Image 1 (cartoon, helix red, strand yellow):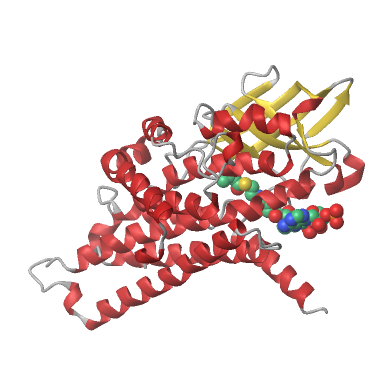
Image 2 (cartoon, rainbow, N blue to C red):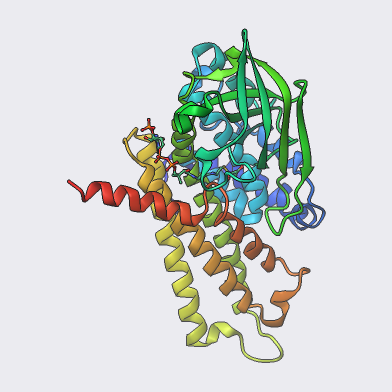
Length: 383
Ligand code: CAA
């Protein structure tokens, strides 16, 4: 299927694969073990001009779209899902600007993101507003030409590493989701603090931090789009970003499948290789088939988004749901090919399963994805 890509797709795949295999593979286990942010790899991605794949040309990017973004994420995630998301979150954080920012805001922020001079994160979730994002409690109160922000954000990927944060706060608490606005906050702004970094089961190479806002003043011109239009901006952003998580899941499932196939061909404990048994062959065939189906749904959704097809939210949720469920299944099954060795952290296989579990949780749990798909279905069939 590799032949189905065009020249540009191949270029992105090759660039990302080179970085993943040459620089990431030798350090992936250490980044995971030590929970170290992958600055060296980010630097390589910057040098290879991969930080602006999805950003329009007029703002310093490549305008190469979501499919190419997904291809880069997939290649990185074949080696380390944590690095895949540390890269992909820059798309999640910058889509709100691309979708809702003024010309001035786009000129101000996007070129430095595209060049990799600044990383950007996305702050929507809160302790009591994860799946029900609309019930967020962070407030942004207007005071002259400034907002005073108070509240806290939770589970912020790239928190601390990023210089820029697109956050969502209620500017009109009486209006529910129609009172939420998207606001850019820069690291170093007085009253904005990065809290502790979470100690996580997987995706350990990427930071996940708490963000605190205490009487944090930002200029009104940091608001993206109209006051009260932030929730729609966040939802449209997630529609565009979820294929990235799905691509991450496809990548790490491929990484695990590759290891399982290699392992199956090796003779263990003096026995003939597992690959000689039909039961093992059938298992590998099912894993590969399900993975390919998930991959094609991700690519189709990404291509639809790039083509400007409207209402892709259902497919975006479907591809995130399917790819991450398949990744969980494949990474778990891949461990079985390692038999007793599969439980050892010294083997590269168990990390894929820990990373896969998190793809089922973030950027909307898979229960949220099912809710989104079901809502579309019920709407479509009500006609
Ligand atoms: N596109 C545009 N607008 C949308 C939309 C979409 N896809 N979905 C909803 N909206 C609009 C609606 O039209 C509605 O607008 P009006 O009030 O003007 O009519 C408004 O948003 C509210 O819509 P709903 O009533 O449907 O909203 P809800 O409160 O029922 O939301 C939900 C339901 C879909 C579950 C939503 O809360 C949701 O997506 N939750 C999950 C959040 C999430 O994915 N968080 C992950 C954050 S990122 C992350 O994990 C971290 C990371 O760093 C990797």
